[in-house]
Length: 206
Image 1: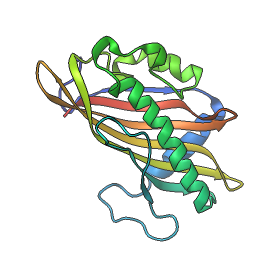
Image 2: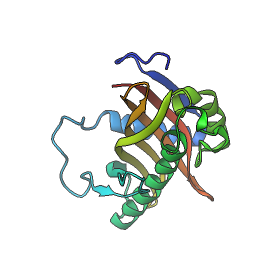
Image 3: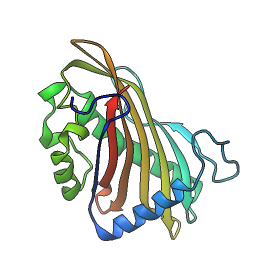
Image 4: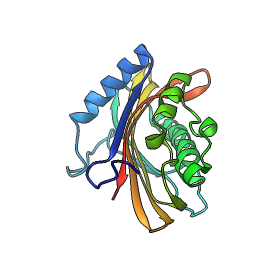
């Protein structure tokens, strides 16, 4: 894997859609000025809410999701619904791109479920980062699946989401190694549901 030296991971960014991009940048700016993982947890109605939701993998490891910052008003029931819906979208990508197989077994045509056409084209170009096709591995086992959501709400409905994620896996083959994929996914909701229209992702060995 090129650029696999610890501390020098692969990185790529892809964005599409002017309106959705503006919403995502608003969310990203809010999140950057918020609490870091090392700061005390927030309290009150907007405090992060943790939930274990998403697809169950063969290892029985589920995705942990939480609500981070919320811009605008969004009732608790709708926050819970968004949390579950986004977890499903992220899980589908992880399963298709990183966890369902190893090496060239990943099919690019099916590696990006939930992506918009533009984001899918960009991610296909960045396939060494956005899938496991570059791995010389016999198996891939998830060790950590975490997602934190920053939401933009308009008229008490979620319109745009920035999903900050951390996926860690163990690969086996010539030797056993630990791989981390982390970053941000930008999502907007349309008639077909939530779709990923952009990303800022890094990938490297631990």
